[in-house]
Image 1 (cartoon, helix red, strand yellow):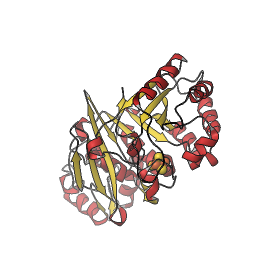
Image 2 (image 1 turned 180 degrees about the vertical axis):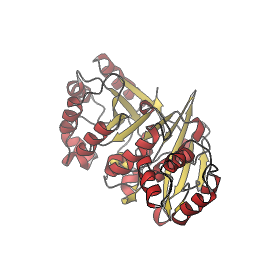
Image 3 (image 1 turned 90 degrees about the vertical axis):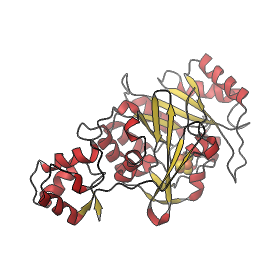
Image 4 (image 1 turned 45 degrees about the vertical axis):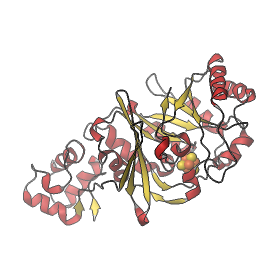
Length: 340
Ligand code: SF4
């Protein structure tokens, strides 16, 4: 049975028309789906019983509860949601001061094969729908307290562009969750065509996983460099007008003796000079099956200081939720973090 949750207002209008219901019913349904705290069609109390019965012939409300939740001593939680083929996706909730950030997954597994990532090692099992993505927000205990959303969980969001854009439309539309796009960040390893569409069609922040400024090295860490070299990604970013409010940041996992040298500082400074952006340095905790190890703290600090001195705004992410391995996709290496 199809799910109502995750449909855009336009899709709801089509459904309502197909079912021969009154046009304004679409807006009533979107209010129930995205603005109220109910879980089934029968609770849509301003719809006539007959209307609800007609809807139920084809649709269910569409929320799925989490299968399991683990809580870290620092308050971070990792939720597991069931998806296709008895696989699970991970969602992380990170509380900090007056903020509650949720990290959502966009795919089951991932095709991109980054050397440092657990999800990449699982291979690709499928795309999530907009409803599956939004369910990770609506079906956690803290959903009414969420202040920020990051698409940094399992999968490459721009490899599932249509459903990700749909979920962003629902999150930011006045008829949907009505969230500010400035509170949402979508992370990509740099799929250029998808990035162009995302930049044109949404107003949310962009985070690009860079991890090294050098071609050859990046090719070894991230096979996508063979298809969309960093140079092309940066060219696209430089040609886009981000305005004053929208932000682009670069994620940079620190690998000991690999990408943490003065030569890297120099090349990063050259590549990013004049671009209004920020670099987020991320501690790496080794995963099975890779020779990579994380840079020690003093190196990360020195790297940050050197970049800042060169005029490149750089921060270090704080590790969160390590005791529950609250980590998914990029977060399995990025941990669950906020900037310092
Ligand atoms: Fe996929 Fe991101 Fe992991 Fe790369 S880092 S394999 S894009 S989930």
